[in-house]
Each structure stands twice: as structure tokens, then as C-alpha cells.
Amino acid sequence: MSPLPEGVRHFPLYLSPQQQAALVEKIRQAVQAAPLFVPAMPRTGKEMSVRMTNCGELGWVTDKERGYRYQPTHPATGAPWPPIPEILLSIWRDVSGHEKPPQACLVNFYDENARMSLHQDRDEQDFSAPVVSVSLGDDCRFRIGATERNGPTVSLRLASGDVLVLGGQSRLAYHGVDRIYPQTSPLLKNGGRINLTLRRVTA
Ligand code: SIN
Ligand code: FE2
Image 1 (cartoon, rainbow, N blue to C red):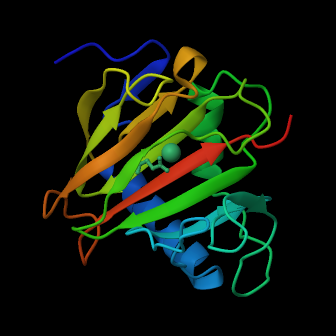
Image 2 (image 1 turned 90 degrees about the vertical axis):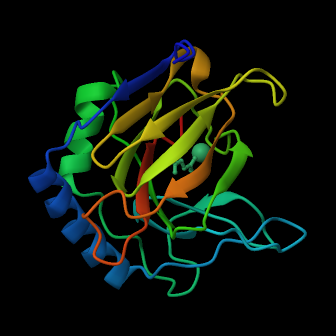
């Protein structure tokens, strides 16, 4: 396998199966309070294939009219987002190397056909903090490249319980999810994959 780009760190099976199950339960509770919504691309309104929600003081949302942004409330219910589960805050403290806690936790749910095309995470004001992501459920093929759209990319397989950090020179690296490998994890009763992405938003 090719080496990962500078600033990318992969922690396979960071979470034990028991910790994963406990975290899934926390996410289920969060989804009850803040239902999954269908994100749509700015201007075109084209729907993305993942379903989303958030935890934290700010959540990332996108729709046709107003585009990519962070906001303190759920776009449909208008309620504040639920708090970020403590286990995620402790992962951040362990791997981020950043003194301040994450403000946003984007929850992405992938069914077996969902994907995420190559993009940069750049809607934050503060790029000094890394992006920390946690995978739960079915495996995926994750692709990561350079900070230019057409730079070289490498692929890695992310499995349930893995933590991935995009920091330093790779904080603005292009990345995406090419595919889900169905039925590769027993964690989620109905299959699919959950990705939790922790970020600092303000400086
Ligand atoms: C994202 O880039 O928002 C999601 C990454 C992932 O699902 O692993
Ligand atoms: Fe991303």
C-alpha cells in the first residue's frame, strides 16, 4: 500500500467492539433528537446520497438556496443540535493535538449505495485544528489526495472502530468515499456505515 500523505494518521480499531456499540447507541439517541436530513448541493439542489445530522454547538448543513454552512440549529426542527458524546470528546483530546474541544460533529449515514465525491473540508474559519473522523459499521474505500483537486490520490479501507486524522499538510486535502463494502460489519442491524467527523469551526 502507498504511504499516507503527510498529516494523515490512521488508527485501525481505535474503538473496541464494546465501545463501538455504546457509541452507536449514543448516535441513535442523537438522531432521535436531530433527525437525519437529505443534504442538497448549492445552486443545483442535487441531493447527496448520504443522510446527515450533527451534534455539537454548530452543525454543517447544505441546501440549494443557502449552500454549505455551519449553523447552531437543525434545519428542519429549528432545535439546537444534541451535545457531542463524551467518548468522541475523549478521542479528540487523545489524537487531535489541539487544545480546544471540537465544536461540530457531522454524522453521515451511508447505505450500501451511498458515496461521497472528492471534496475539501474548508467551511471552517480555523484550519489549525485537524479533522478527526470515526468510522462505524460497514467498511468503505476512502480516497485521499493532495490539496489540489487533480493531485495524486491513495485509497485505504476504513473499518468499524477506525479513527482517521486529517491534519497539518493534509488538513485541506481532497478526500471522499468511493464505495461501501456491504455486510462487512455486524455492528449496525440494518447494515450501512456511519462516519462521525469532529471539527473546530471558529478561530
Ligand atoms: C466526509 O468527508 O465528510 C466523510 C468522510 C467519511 O465518510 O469517511
Ligand atoms: Fe470531508
